[in-house]
Length: 547
Image (cartoon, rainbow, N blue to C red; front, side, top):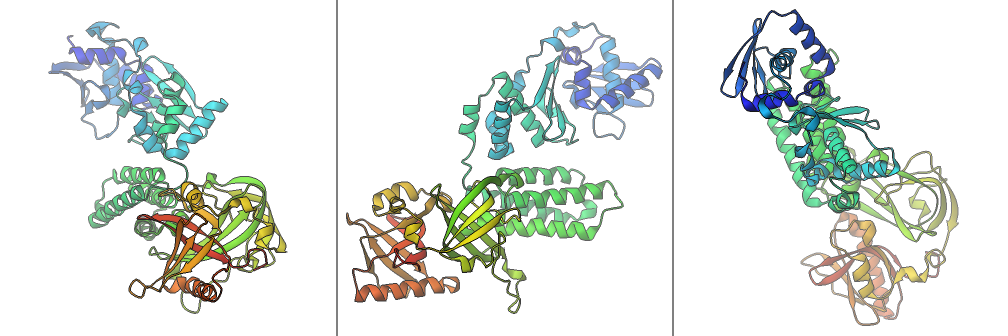
């Protein structure tokens, strides 16, 4: 029997592990039994293929073997194709065709697969976790031999079989696409074999602080367009491949740092899986509810303001880490109402020991609120009062949990002891107050940095009130340091900023009566054109006294 050269090489390289990787061990064992019970199969060569008849079934075996076809209705690699491959291997010698043997495979295609693509699919958090596990010796268990690389990821409870071509690899999660497990397994193997190194991977990862607004909008736009197309098609006419589409969108949401959207899409994926499996547990009402949740959340994230994006996007469950005891001082709070429909209050804390800022964001969807049903102020950590009442108070927070963005967890495992109202000068050292605006520019105004990196306490040498801009409806105040460098405080009038504007107007009135009035401003620093600006969160016109 003459077998075309490329196919003969593929057959010679395909050991039993490779065939198991194409499908699973049960299918290979079933194919062996079928082959033993069959009469002599018939085979003919057609171009680069071998047409093998096994009883009533006709298989077309070609290279790569994973692209072989069968007349049975199975969409995956069926037992007929495996039986045909096994029979063809029996008809050839181990080295026929001049192709490489299984033992000589060096996995060249897996070695040259770009690490950049793997990092983009996995996201910075998964890559960082993988690097930590590899460095601690608790990484993936990898068994390479013959034509297959078996990678066990015990923390994911999955096993991946990497093959060449890569698209024919298999995963115990049964995904037909190149899922995140396959990407993680390939990256773990590249790390172990030295194809890539940890330093190069860290350089490829985006910063852990903050999200790329353009990437967020791009992912959310793609999610909405895909879901809109599914809605137009209708559930009864959707193909089973829709599940893979939703899984891919969830992976994109993970990479963009949108865990709430990722969870919403994975919930929708579960409904589609139950629907296509004709599960008795499937309910179209639940499917529609989860569909609407994912669609609405993607739309809200796409137009979210910077100040509400963090809370609206949610946090990965494992991002909150215990930090023990924190000595906190509630410097100020800010009312927030974004275009996304979420509103509430952000509380800003100063940590006395480590000299850093922490925040707690209490933001909820405003469109559920009615005039007579406003929610009460937030009470956290077993405090005897609301957070708003703890303004300018010190407290000891025991069992605190914090995420990478400096956000405090509201978990009931935390408990706080209120220490009473304190003058801010006793809580914040003078070295942490900016009087030199050039240092403020260098250290606290990085473009597109998260808000926590731009918070600052500022003491100007003098303050100069400006005329109220009635056209732009903007209040403006010029702050000047000892070298004459300026910092501009600008607040545009709107309902949520009314209290801020009124407080600044009262301060400006005092300045006109007493130009030497000293003050310390707490706020968020940013750049706009050639100006350095500050959004004011709190104003201390008597820093040494209790406000």
